[in-house]
Image (cartoon, rainbow, N blue to C red; front, top):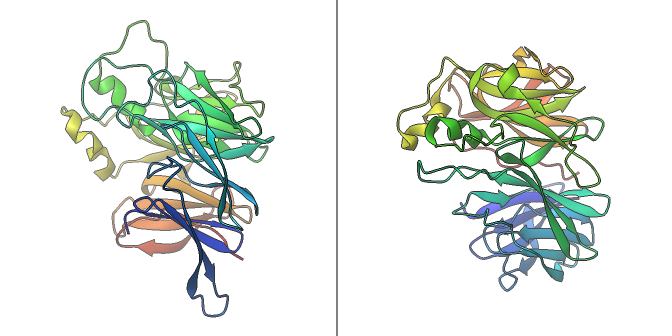
Length: 338
């Protein structure tokens, strides 16, 4: 149903039910592919609730679910399906969690800690004075149940994930909703934050103060949809150029996703220049799903809308294979069980 989210770890599928506030582990028979319920873990008493992040699996005995809005991170054992500890942490700070503006979705285990990039959106209503809510990453230390919210004012708002390249560099990229800020909101003239930029986050839990790529200077665009791929000191972005004008009404801002003139380009992180990348120009929206056996998988919304969406496997930098297509719905998760 609409309240269920699917994940996997090892050879098991895990389904989170946001209404029942339960995590169910499923086994899959390798011969018949039939599914059967192994165990159900209730988190109803923990405060995690429906707005939790994706589970962060560390090992067969340790995994985490978080809801930073409430200052709760639940540690559980995915083998025993038992709660190990409920960590009470400082909630998202400085009043930033206003009406669903910010949230965390994905945790990245790094050097014994978990990094949660914080998604930043725009308010649901327009068009009061815009609050600069900055790029933010939450750094959680399970050993001490402590959390630190690390900010960078150079970017207005960030996505809920890192782009990680082949060297392990973690890049923080702009939320697509940043593209709605300047067209609709009054901005403080003294604000120096950029709507479109790329930051680097260090393994020690800090933003790299010497790294910032200002996409506003290098890409002639009016809408930056997302950043899709980091490779060889380049990041591939999905955007619409300045021939597009945003609708007059803020309520119509999402009409942009019905367009067919999305483009892809590769940003050289050393020079900031936009270089040609034709492989994904056919899409009207591209989303990274997962990396399996060293290959990246993406959901591609077909530009001509002949199909609702496609599942792409990236074989090399510019070579992609269509794995499947779907007329309705969308792909929320893909994983490998065995």
